[in-house]
Image 1 (cartoon, rainbow, N blue to C red):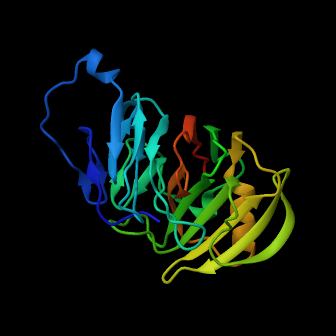
Image 2 (cartoon, rainbow, N blue to C red; image 1 turned 90 degrees about the vertical axis):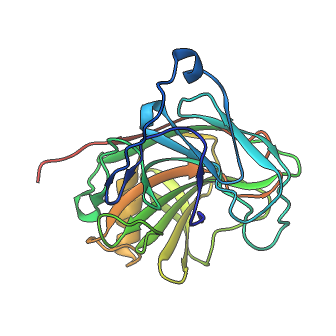
Length: 267
């Protein structure tokens, strides 16, 4: 879960809930655009011309932990001393997202979208990762947020929909398991649910882990969550995030490529 405040490491024009935040900044050279950027603690950086935001989001630990990015929709955990052990919350969630997170928004995202208007093919996403083994403890998870209104400057107050593609170490989602081996969109998932004090958290864990997905359609998973009463049709999808909840170590975790595609349908 993300912290309330973040430090932005790179110059960016952030679209806030109340409008566009204009920043007077010197023009960046093409050489600077190709420079590797390091983000530590809870620093963030706009990448791919503002289409995505990388958020190191170390919210549950003060240990040294940093990621690097080359300015494209990718990042790598280059060092991590997080050691939150086998119990309790993770130390951080280094991630990349499209949409709005605590009022910090990517450009021309196509979000928010009302849940009732999300059809097959409306929101699709692809993600390729690297996942180290050893003593690392982490998950590989989408964190998808719904708010009761189209915008918010704080934490979303509707639902958190997580999709665990994989995990390393004996961890499970927040809450309790409510279903097992459910076939959704041609894949098998276990379903978990918990009331997270102000919003619902529903998690879908793949029964067979993977390092990547291609053109994953969010509609079947959203439809299942709505049928269970965890997400309301009147709420709004405001962000699609993908990253790694890290409980221990995590060096070598990487997002090699990431994309979210939004297709608007006629009413």
